[in-house]
Length: 110
Length: 115
View 1 (cartoon, rainbow over the protein chains, first blue to last red):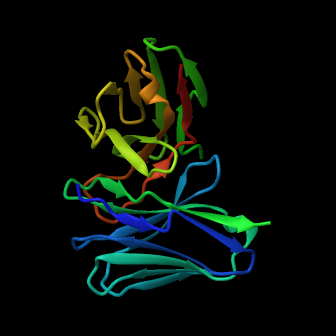
View 2: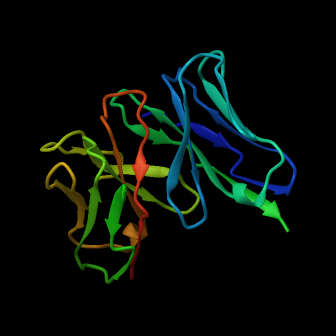
């Protein structure tokens, strides 16, 4: 299936700075899901976006789905140490299987 | 509420040995999945089971077999382990594979090393 490209691979930020990760597809997405994986942990579902131009917020996290439904982003405002981990986007393919991006690792600089 | 339980959490195998990874969920989900995760990569689907009694290949099925023992349990077997199968394995479940708006719930993972 068509992969989703996720960038950047890593992002180093100072605590308190913002963080953004992007997912891009060459084809229109039916939906996009976002997961967080803490170091040594397992992926945990954050949210699903379905509608064109959709924006959803969870406290300091803002999720967007592009108007053309070919890209999505996750933005974290004022990062905290609890935000450390890898953030994955995933899309459902025609067989309803989740196809995963490679993830963006959020690293807080000491 | 246990969710998705995987055993074992860690395993070291010698090349050529076999083993079975066990997974059970208590959420009455129809669909179950086995993924592998390699460093710096996303999750890749090995096999899935849309419902009890059915199994299908995912993206990377070679070297693996699965059994959907009942609605709760889905096991993954490595018949002859190879170093390329060193990875972290995750079992997951969801209500129904055919639904768009269904999230996946993951087990804690099995860290497998093949030497």
